[in-house]
Image (cartoon, rainbow, N blue to C red; front, side, top):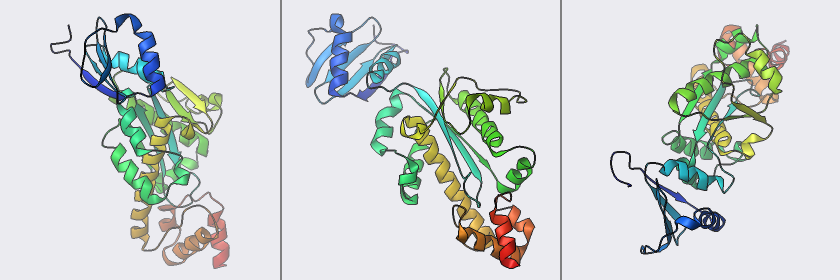
Amino acid sequence: MYSGERMKTISISASAGQIKKIKELYKDEITDKKIPYADCFIATEDCAITVYLSGKVVLQGAMAQHHAEIIASFNGFFAHGGSDEVGTGDYFGPVCVCAVYLDHQHLDFVNSLNPSDTKGMDDGQIIAIAKALIKKVPYSLLILPNDKYNVYHKKYNLNAIKSMLHNQCYLHLQKKVTKPFTGIIDQFTPQESYFRYLKDEKEIFKDLRFETKAENKYLAVACGAIIARHAFLEALHQLEKYVGMPLPKGAGAKVDQAAADILEKHGIEMLSKVAKLHFKNTEKAKEILG
């Protein structure tokens, strides 16, 4: 019953609470079969489930993925997409948006990386986790360089630009994920405004939920934020090599001075390639130069 080309094996970790719920849900399908180090063996019509004393659960059969998703949902997890943007508050550097898809088969791996709010991580942690993630999880990353950003911002406000980038990320991600999913956006504008910004787009990803502080609630959003942050850091490093000087993050006084130095040495054309010109830092830089 569990052999042939459609045979699939999935291994996940389950908490004590999840194992209790597994036994409750499959109580009529628990068998007397004895397996070394196993708590119980469950035989459904389309899947064999072995629950080990260690908390490891092995599922085999044509519907292994379906049953694994049911088990993962016992712990509040559900397969979902998540997206976040980085760089919108930084004068220097691009805007980076990343959408990530996670399901039960990614759960143990992602949890092992201990992703959390990127604001609490240093750059080294971001880079290490991002490099691990991009090897394992489906994702879509878009980077809007400063020169193009400055052109778009003459026509669109920042929330409109972010909406278009998030939409494109989800459309690209949808092509990598073969089944429907709900995307979670770390809300930066009301839902009605988001879709209004996309009214002229040819294609719109609509299965979305908008939540504040989503990065702290949904693993896929946290992963998207980490990959986007990594991309921003890499891009900023390349821009520093391009202008031959450090480019501070944020939009504070150090940024004003750096912008003034670039203006003095290279002019506004060079600045437009590394900075978001509509920020107040541009005028402050000009004031520094007198």
